[in-house]
Length: 135
Ligand SMILES: [Zn+2]
Ligand SMILES: [Zn+2]
Image (cartoon, rainbow, N blue to C red; front, top):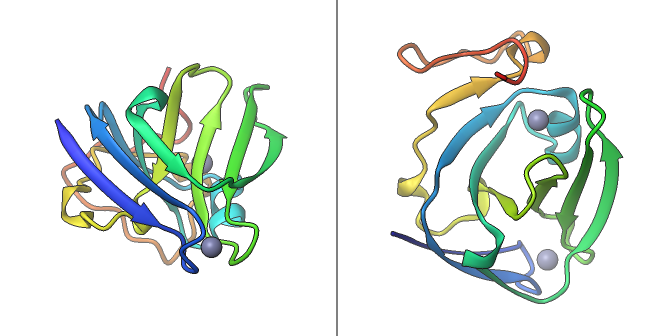
């Protein structure tokens, strides 16, 4: 069990999570780079039921390259990207690791979409990297 807490920059939205984190990943896809404004997204996927959100994030939906519906959750007031959902992974919520107070818990196990990573991003040796999303 991993207990995690976090807030957006202004504090309007916060969350508490308690449960397994089966997926920890860095995603270098173009949508993650644009929606986070970062070189890549840091993601901790948990069961949505294990995450209690206080406040109401604004959402934005777009299609992934696989044709699934992606939903981004962010603070309407300060713009902090907080959560992401993929219609192909029903019931799972991706937490942006950068907003988590217990950030020492984040240890990515995989890099995905390295085909669209920024040139300047150096990948850590010793964790697998995939050009796209591994099947
Ligand atoms: Zn905020
Ligand atoms: Zn991505």
